[in-house]
Every structure is written in structure tokens, then in C-alpha cells.
Length: 292
Image (tube, rainbow, N blue to C red; front, side, top):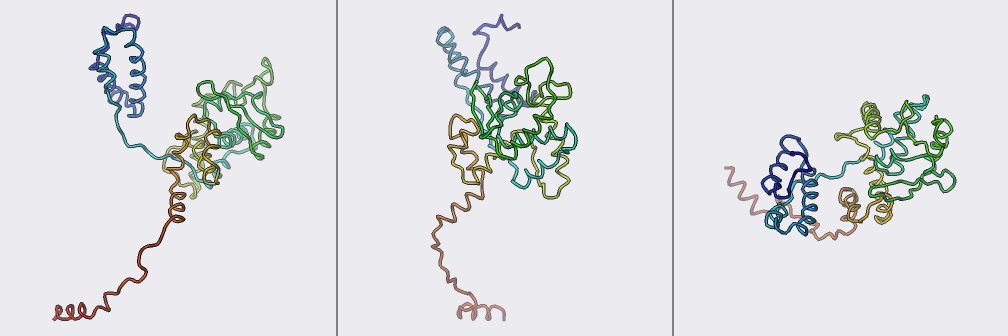
């Protein structure tokens, strides 16, 4: 059926449930993806019920479909040492290797989402003190993120070596491009990252048992800021989160910080003197008789 021929009365609760089951069984989507699709359907029918009261009964049935519960995984991130090993993998002697080194360092240092990194243009970067980059986030939200000293030096050298497109103003060139001088895609960045992750695995200190995606570097930056004592409010603004509750996931994921916090607040109420069973005369006498 063509989309323009679908009527509201054609969409029923049974149809929506079959669609959700199809997402999981046939498309092999995760439960999280299933819930996201259902949230969009709910949002649409909350709007439709105002303009189509004759279908209100079936719409209410659709709106009553609950989200599916699932065990939420903890945030995966690289430790400081693992991040250092990964960022040291590109070979800066070649142009592509130097670009990759700057790309990975910039991705970690700014905590940018992969799409934000893809969309950065040369004019979005200010390398004069204080060095900052303007990131264009989700929902057309714009935020300014500071660039640290070593990354600033890498960017300066990269901009000097960079091959610019002749037909485009220098500032309108994308910061990271492929060999065809075209904007790098999200998959291109993932490919570059995966290549160096495989190289890093040859180092015995790189003990990573989960997929390392560009978002893992964002998680790593947030965790390292938190472990350094940076307030969650600043980390929220740094990452571009709307609500601080989104940023709190990093505090829940850091088991070492939890342990230290509990140790600082711990009151030792357990008795220090634990009686020794060997000194119990009645017990020793009974055991001696038992062995006869």
C-alpha cells in the first residue's frame, strides 16, 4: 500500500504490535530501537487523536502499548592509558597518518559526536588563545568547546599541511576530508578508528573487550573529566546535554569513584576483636571426645 493511500483506520493496535515484533525478529533491531520507534508512533497518534476523534478508541489502544523493558548496559569507555595507546597508533610521517592522528586526538579532546566532527569546517575553529571550536549539535544546537594546548598545536600544523579545495573559500572547507577532498562520512571515521583499534590490540596493555566506536571516545573524555574532579554541570555543557540527568550516567558507571566515596563515608562498626574458636575450652573438649 502506498503511503498516501493509508488511512488512520488502517493502523490498529494489532498492526503496530506486529510491526514491533517484525523489527526485533526480522530486522534484528535492539529493544532500544524498538522502543524509539514506538515512541515516535505514540507521539504521532497523540497528535492525530485531536483531529480524528472518530478513531479515538483504537488510538487509545495504540497509545496503551507499553515500552519493552530490557537490562541497560553500563557506559563503555577507555581508560587513560588505553586512550593514550590508541592515539599513538597513527603514523604522522604521512599526510593520511597525520590527518588520522589529528582526527582521533580532536575527537577525544572535544568530546564531539561523530556527526559534529564530520560537519566541522575550517571557519569553525579558532586557534588563537583561547583556542575553541564551534560544534553544531543535535536539534540545531550550537556550543563552543575549548581545545587543549597539545591538540591546538596539532591543529595548527594540520591546517598548514591541509590540502584545500580550489573552488571553495578556505573557511568553508571541511576540516577532515577523504582522498577525493570530499567530506568524511560517519562510516569513514568509524573505519579509520577501527583500523587503529586493531593495531592497538597488539599492545598487551590495551585490554578492551567491547567494540570501540567514535562515541566510546566521547564517553572516555567525559569519564576522565569526572575522575579529574570536574563538576557534572560543566561536563553537561561540554558534551551538549540538555539535562544533567543524562550526564549522571558517567557518575553511575565509575565504580572506583563509588568505592572512594563509600570509603570516605564509611563508619567502622564491626568489632575488631573476633573470638578465636581454638580458645573455646568446651568446644575443644567436645571435639576431642568426638574424635575418639
